[in-house]
Image (cartoon, rainbow, N blue to C red; front, side, top):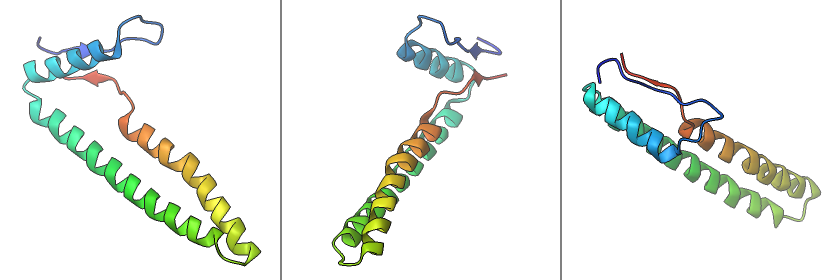
Length: 103
């Protein structure tokens, strides 16, 4: 499996699990096992940091919603709205599938 490339186009009927298996098998065959493990470790760490920061922002937003000021209520709603968009977007960017090319 020298110079292994695993890439399946948009309209393909190949299952994502099979693509993941082939890319990891290709990485192992090419001697890139450490690269795959380090990348996954970074993905997990970045995901946990994103979720922790998002949780803290959510707690602060709910705290602001309990304040008597209209400005605090609007700011709390804005923070919750941004969290609903930003956290999933960041997690998608971290875990999205990329072209795997081990040469």
